[in-house]
Length: 449
Image (cartoon, rainbow, N blue to C red; front, side):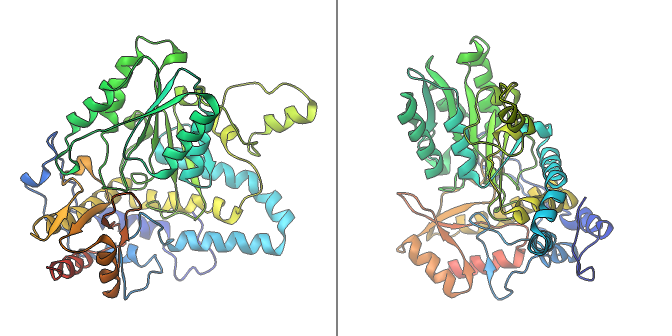
């Protein structure tokens, strides 16, 4: 389904990319942490050295070669196929906007929905297209079926977008928001501790559990499946109107982890596509289970569900349940970006979700093990692959996080500071990085002592 634009001499064809993907992450098997989260105590697989296959994948990005880019969690570079798709659609819209839009909108939306649905293992009717994680979370919580006397249970570890969406929902409905602590210390947190603290906090008033899959504040990844399984035990004795809906900000696992919605067990899942998916800026998705869609209502008029506009034209009642198309906010879009989502999903499919997951975890593991071995560094992100993904957070003795990031920037290394009350320095390796990049970063941080 992927299209490559006019510069065919530069673009990889399907056969070439598939052969690259087949060998791209050989040996990059993820270490599997146990419930204690101490994966460092286990033997790790050998490190994958730079390969021609990963080098070719790296060349799909127009990254400045004199800089080590470790900021994919914030905003990512587009691979060539995505850049060319954006440019192709932009040129078409500029040359003949009405005819190009009318001729492409239906088929391109269907393609994006189909590839997005395939990526996360759901029917395409369970996918909504949004502009960002924040928009997706706003749509979920604003449309959630929750009322006065019920509560939305969450944790102390969300980003602003979740907390503000919950606050606005509580303000408009009279429902309450309750925040809990999941662990005593993030470095020593265990899967069992996290799951128990969340599930034990559920009360008869709990209507939704609002979680963040991978925390951008520490790099901790929640064990969503065990949480979902325990919540399902609670739901077994509840009526549908009282069942707990598991809602997830999934952006920092989306594009990294080799999972599908059913394997996570959540009901509503929001993610932007401009980070780890390397997709167009200003794009996002919401995925939902059957229960998820039954638990929310659309709050912004859609342009994607023909039956809704037909009902408006004829003056008839809008019938049927919430679907992804009905949930997708309408309005004219930056169509060249929305339609190029197809190439981002195709890019991942060609490489392989498992290979991307293995490679990202391998680079993050290399970084974490290097940092934890330094006496002047405190690592906050769990070492276990089961409790972490691609974000690595740390402190350097005697330096503020801002000073650490500034000093790395002087060495042409891109890092970020966590935008929270307690800030940390943060690095996020991804598939366009190399093992040599990580070695260089570790050498620089070692010199801060």
